[in-house]
Image (cartoon, rainbow, N blue to C red; front, side, top):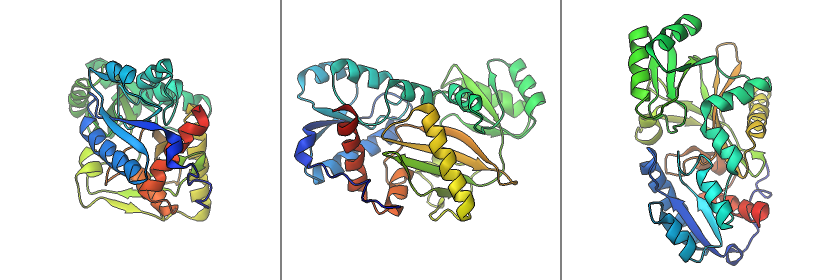
Length: 316
């Protein structure tokens, strides 16, 4: 892949005064604080007139009273990644990075994302929605074990659990319900996991993930030191091309813009299965999009500038 087309050719002064939005009130606040700090440091080091806003109750006041030419959104989870912040910035007339209102809201809703993918014939694991112990029993009968339980509107694997029996399923549903009124359960796909980033319409090199945990959970993502990241991902050229194409189709179906990251499983027969799409992926020292960008000859600063440049080209 040529990185020339990905690198921003925009001078730092052309971005104006950039507000980096991070923190917020979602369950992913700790990750967003780290992502925001890294992005802000990179922008300032590149000569961009950037400053940070830890999004709180004074956000409207700051948007109205600060001179802001554009916003770099590094808010993970609800309130930042679900279309609400995008809608607020649209109303304020402030251009911003990443996907628009509809794609952000859709991608944040794992259930509706799956329904869109299924309507287009894209592969995603069989699933059910849980709202009672009876739903758990019905899902177990239909899908079998093992299963994985997920809050429908959370990221960073928050509230997720792999379960092996009905008692574990009911307990996991109750736990996930603490994070979200809508809880999803999926058929467990046994096999390697991949994550694939898109940047400005191009698919970056896929990453194969390895963990000693039962799945790639919050600890494996942000805390563990034994998580494995393989680039090249180890697939044959043919299978990697298939994975890249599936990622592009998954993002196109949702309508992502600027940057995104898709999580995919591969079963024992080599079949790929789409799990979810992230429209504001992590930008910490453990994060995957910076790793993929590095494999495409983009360092962290170049990655951040490319994301910001897309906001200039897409939204003026």
